[in-house]
Length: 133
View 1 (cartoon, helix red, strand yellow):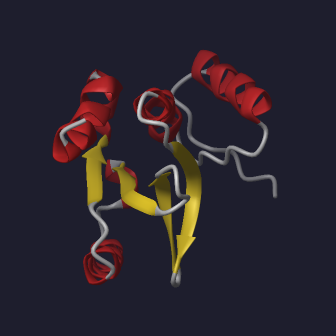
View 2: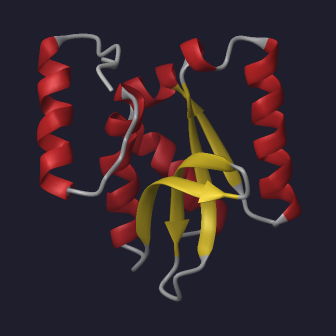
């Protein structure tokens, strides 16, 4: 319960808290997820889609799922922060998540933290380009 997320600074932490209050059920779990979320929402809204955070699929949770107008998942998104994808067991877990997405024929987009921090909208554009949006 008392676990505190490792935000880079108080300003970022306060911004994430405001974001959580504004969107209510949004459950971003890291600063890079909070940074990417608005870009994904902007992408999805222009295509009449929507985004859900912490989407449970089989035995895993994906950082984001993008749904189409028919409420079908059309893409999964993972934010790969260095601290959470370094160990062999974490890499195995990522491979299992990749396999589930592949087996279900769902595109899985993985973005590293440095790319998200540099330009979250460019990351979202990569998804749009995949679909020719």
